[in-house]
Structures are given as structure tokens and as C-alpha cells.
Length: 95
Image 1 (cartoon, rainbow, N blue to C red):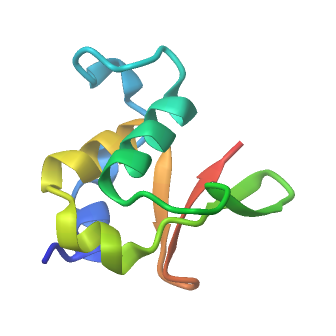
Image 2 (cartoon, rainbow, N blue to C red; image 1 turned 90 degrees about the vertical axis):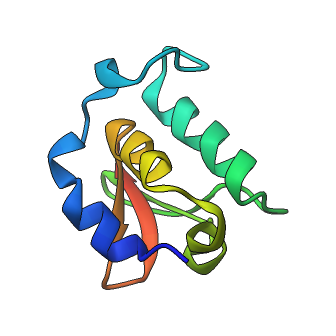
């Protein structure tokens, strides 16, 4: 199982570098992240679970993601603008 927090930290310098993704399924970084998360850890609720000011929190369960994600998947999420919140043990994005 992948250590989500450590992997996000290790590759933090990839944050927001969407142009490094080869053949993204869309030209929109947020939509690209949502599609990847849905493929890796499908859910049955809205993908955005909460919003506060200029930040959205994602409903993807980190333990489910850790069980199936590769390091390359986490790098892609970072490049799409996804971050890990250790405070809430969840994924979030700035908007």
C-alpha cells in the first residue's frame, strides 16, 4: 500500500505542472484529476465534499486510493493541482 502523505511530500515539486502530463484526457487540470480519482477509487457521492473560501475538499477516501494508486498516479494528481491535507487526511485543491 502506498503512503499517500509521503508520496505527495516526495513529489511536491510537481504541483501544478499540468503541461508535464502526457496525453491528458482533457485540457482542464481539475477535470483530469476528477477522472483519475474516479477511475482509481470510484465513489457514490459528489467528488467535491466541501468548500471553504478558495479551497475544495475531495470525497475520495485516502485509504482506498492508497490501496490502488501508483507513485505515477500521485504525481499526475499533483500536476493537476491536487494536494494532500494531513490535518484532515483528505485531498484538496485550490480554486
